[in-house]
Length: 129
Image (cartoon, rainbow, N blue to C red):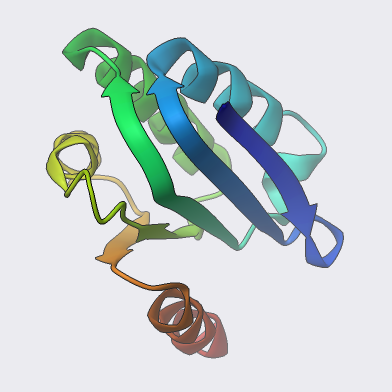
C-alpha cells in the first residue's frame, strides 16, 4: 500500500497516510514532495497517520535521511508541528528513532494512539501562533 499525502487548509497542513507495508524509499519520496516550494513556507502542521501500518521496511540509514530532510525544512520553516498517530500493531520504535534525530530541531513532535487526540494537540499548538 505505501505512503500518500494531501495538503490541507490551502497548504497550511499536510496529512501523510501510511498503510500496509511501508518502505523507507516511499517516505523519502513523499517528504521531498511535501517540502517542495511553494508548499514548505505555508506549512504549520503535519498529521502523520501510521495507524494502518502492518510492517515497516525502513533502515536506520533511511530514518537518518528522513530526519535530514526534516532538518533542512526546519531551516526554512521552523514552526511546523508533527502529530504522529501510531499503529496499534507497530508501536513507537521508528518514531522514537526519528525524534532522536530531531531533538535539537525547532519542530514540535508528539505521538498519539488516536486521531482525535492528535488533532486536539495540533489545535492547541496552533492557537499559540
